[in-house]
Length: 236
Ligand SMILES: Cc1cc2nc3c(=O)[nH]c(=O)nc-3n(C[C@H](O)[C@H](O)[C@H](O)COP(=O)(O)OP(=O)(O)OC[C@H]3O[C@@H](n4cnc5c(N)ncnc54)[C@H](O)[C@@H]3O)c2cc1C
Image 1 (cartoon, protein in one colour):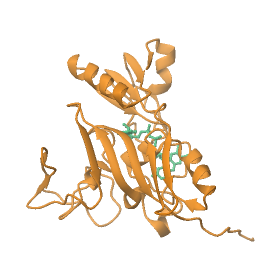
Image 2 (image 1 turned 90 degrees about the horizontal axis):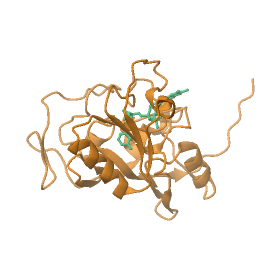
Image 3 (image 1 turned 60 degrees about the horizontal axis):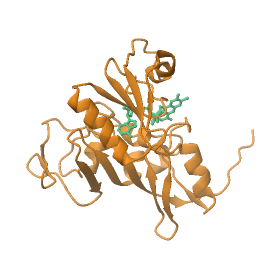
Image 4 (image 1 turned 90 degrees about the vertical axis):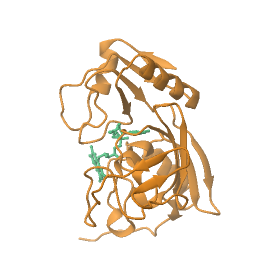
């Protein structure tokens, strides 16, 4: 685990592309594996410290900028765990840089359409913001491509959810040991990033997508891929 305590080392974690200026943190923790993610969460809980999750910092709404407490950065959770060319899926740690991922799957003639224009973002940041980009007009946003999420909660428990297993019924998402009472509003059909995604009969995985680091630390995601698109060129 890398721990940064000097203010000049912490400064880069107090900004993203929002121009928000009032960030502040005591320490930045950079875990190298899930056990160390647990340790950071445990430290924050025991010391009653606010914990802000940081990915690449390309966000535009200051979601990764702490006001106080400590930061956990996913930058060392950067392994592409598996690329399943037969089933067209990939398993990634949340700190994988989108640019690197796109290059890696290109070797297998595969493509991941919903990446944002800023390819320096991390896949975990994309899932936490439900990013969409230039290909989303045709292929849809990140939400559509997330098959499984592994998230570590502030209780230290692991929430591992696969798409298609738990759905909303009577205002509740029943994950067995967690029963989540959903708020009464419903996310509109038009593109909307405000609040948690809440729909009738929704899949529990969609509550985590776009939750902006408020529910837990995403450590791993499994995503759907498509075949590489044909080369395009534009003549003016
Ligand atoms: C030039 C430019 C172009 C852009 N184009 C687009 C675009 O086309 N479409 C688009 O949607 N966005 C775009 N963005 C915004 C940004 O790139 C996306 O929001 C991106 O998904 C953020 O990823 P990140 O890794 O930088 O996350 P960060 O900015 O580091 O974090 C974003 C949020 O996600 C949370 N988070 C990050 N990782 C995790 C994790 N592992 N677990 C839980 N929560 C986590 C953070 O706490 C924070 O709330 C653009 C930004 C720039 C600068």
